[in-house]
Image 1: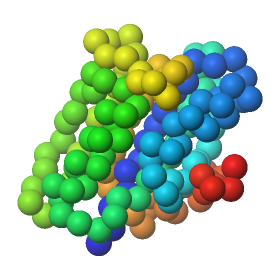
Image 2 (image 1 turned 90 degrees about the vertical axis):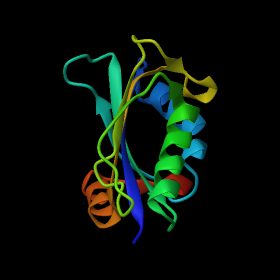
Image 3 (image 1 turned 135 degrees about the horizontal axis):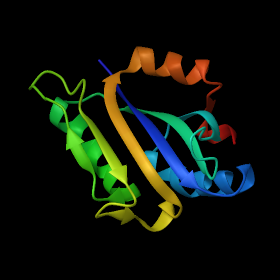
Image 4 (image 1 turned 180 degrees about the horizontal axis):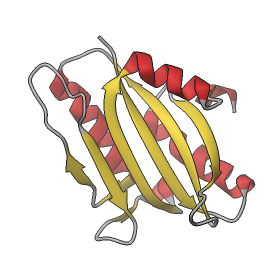
Length: 141
């Protein structure tokens, strides 16, 4: 069974063009097959732009799924708050949150990243969610 990771990223940028530059720098961190969903100004704080992504994790053990997720998160930023319960059979529900105002900071290519979260789940619902949000392949941008 393939697993997907749902990402919600918020960047402090002035417009869509600046957001696209930020995305161009970070998308390679997710590897092939990442789907970019809807990107729009955050309704509470208009100077933040939120973007939803879904990345597929190659088939493997639960430990490999969690490791892939954590390595990608570490490439984006440090200071993640990680939560959720794991079992030997499933990483479903494993999640994390990053807040740029906390202890950590965005890493090199993720300049402008203010807040982020991830959630590991079933890939079938993830792909449908990305498409419903107007998703596009990272290779088509």
